[in-house]
Image 1: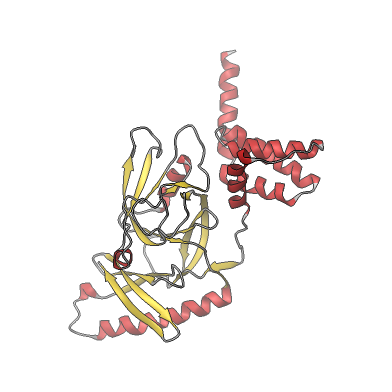
Image 2 (image 1 turned 135 degrees about the horizontal axis):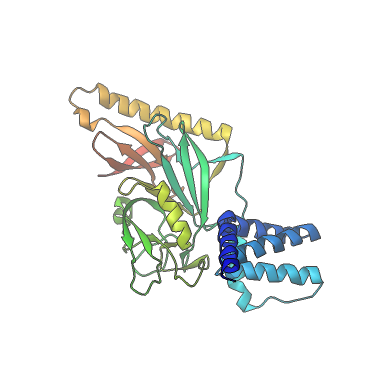
Length: 336
């Protein structure tokens, strides 16, 4: 009997490891929305696999229930209790373009010693994307479901329960950030407000990337006080792509997905601009070698907000804020 229990535990543990919960939930949601008996059956199978791998995922049970109702030909009506499931399902059903590149991420340093990763949070889709730097071109390597502020994004003031948009450095890791476990067992702090936030009069503090209570899998798409809340396991995975004190996250309402041709054209234009500006600095003999600038990335936040150039010299990283309009590029702020 004891041997049977151990064997069963081993099988379930390995099955849970094999099933990638986030991807399976996304696929189950998409299959259910497609309709058709084969898609509905696939949704049921995927949802069932998640219930075994992650028993705390209430969405998985909900998706399985809807699939079974439809296959049984039983009519049902959705009510208020279904809203949180519908909201999460809607967020998970948004398609990620496979043949396009993010127009928000340009100017990636084409030559670097270590592998670089860039985090982009799109509040519209409740997705946190991880891009690698493949010879100066962003390549999507991972994405995570993430909750945002209860009242959406574009934070303006302390206590408004909104998530800020902008570029923020990931500063440090906090273990057990809240005694009652409501924020999970790990939090990654961001340097909100940045220089542009302060210049524009935005207030608040304590914007983190953190986990969730141990008795749930994830929270609803809009449910935090302004932070980004991920599944506890996903916070652990996300840490693999982060260098504390160096890595940045770009938080936007919407990613501007571009064709490769359009992305290359915009990237080339931007590189030419910064090449002229920074090559001039290098040729200036009065500039200290430690002050020579290298563009690491150029991140676009919003058409009404300054874009952010992440600059590196021999000692550290800092940010420059640029305004783009029909007249060209104009430097707005420096932040060291």
